[in-house]
Image (cartoon, rainbow, N blue to C red; front, side, top):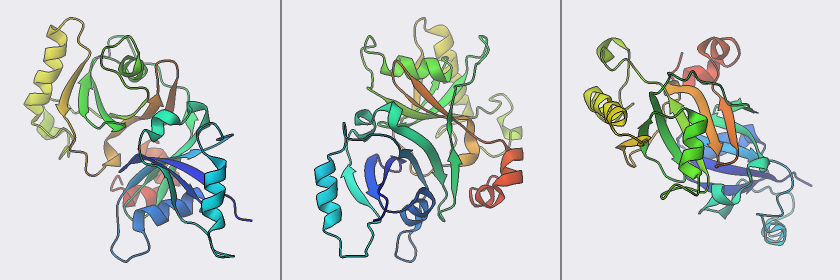
Length: 257
């Protein structure tokens, strides 16, 4: 009997998928497919624990029973809509960052970091269920709770987002590659931050609404956050030193080293 794994994909699509493949094999399959020439990055989280509250076990069994004897199922889509919303945070395990050629970096959940009170310039790429690129004066945990709090007029039930690096906006030409980092000129990004300083009670400003077509892992700052108004999970990004020492092949594939 083959083990059935469940995965929540956050990028490039939001979905809940069952598979007989373990996380590393699933990463390779989803990134490269079975046809020559297929290649795309992927971000997903392995689902753990009792899933009966959000997965129909009878439907899952019926679909897997259709397989010829000895065959395995690479991917069985169980949901392609509101998948994050319907998955309890308690069931979210390790997160995997997958490069276009199927190499994966595993990040385990940990406690969110503490930020200094004076730190008030943050750049976030929302991943799921919406994808705007935004600046904010809220640190990641506060941003997550603000975006999902029911008292906020426009809010989300849950959110997954990336804390991205902010280059020196006054000397951006000396800050190294920024490419499609902002989807706008550095002067525009600077003006977005300034608008937050001037507008009392305003916490976010959208830079780009929905142009996330690829993902540059080298631009991740502290890591990836998933949460709601009560709880925030944090997946800490590994440092360049850690990548060089233990994940060199992945970092080369991700064009970080």
